[in-house]
Length: 224
Image (cartoon, rainbow, N blue to C red; front, side):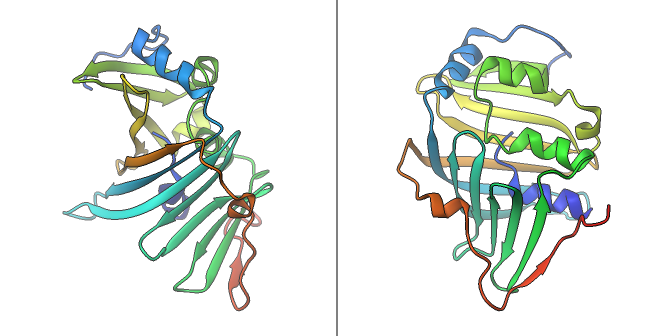
């Protein structure tokens, strides 16, 4: 449960149809993926919706995300930020400003955690080969100018945490509309993006934040 909650906070990325594992991508998806090679940095506002089996109503929060190629990101959830997830060079850091607490997750950690994080840390697929190396295509659809890809992680270890990923994109301007993750326990998390900026100037310090004085530091996966 602890690792599932953590993944909910960092998900940058993710149509009813018959399963078509190994299917060729449609032209709209190929065109969208080709456009991703021109993106070196990216930022956007988002609305995050979490659906949990234990809750009758979904939880919604607003936030902002920054991404810099190849794999740096920063998510701030809430205004002011109540949770900040940063992909630092050697670890994932999750700050809880109201609690004055930070959690460290080493990126070298083996097992399902590391395989699941590998699906997310690049922000979104950088090319068709990148996507096909990590996922099988479950279904794909284009409707009202929006393309939807439903994907399944190829890694069996990753699937024990994230069973399915959906990516929604604009077929006209190739903007990322939304992502949705379906977890193995049946819960889902969706991010809907707006006000995106392509290749904005992003201060490198955004991805290397110091731990403020007075914060408690923990390593939840230590010893596992």
